[in-house]
Image (cartoon, rainbow, N blue to C red; front, side, top):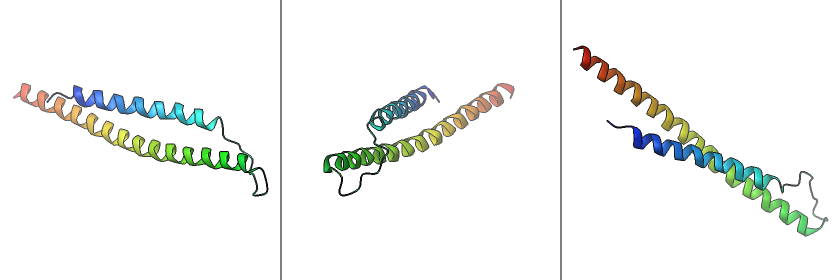
Length: 93
């Protein structure tokens, strides 16, 4: 069984997660850490809400993709060990 295509997919998934991290840092740069009350300028408030919404979406997908990458990496590692064990036992027999 050739695991190389699965390794490529896992690497692409990891690169996607790193790209999302950079994207999140870029969006968070515009984040205003001060709370704007309703009587403040509506432009500041709407920008704050927009940035917060973008960060929520990026965080949600970042967490999902990270869990998928970890599970896929563990499965890929287990398959690699299993494949090595099978080839070692067939050579010894």
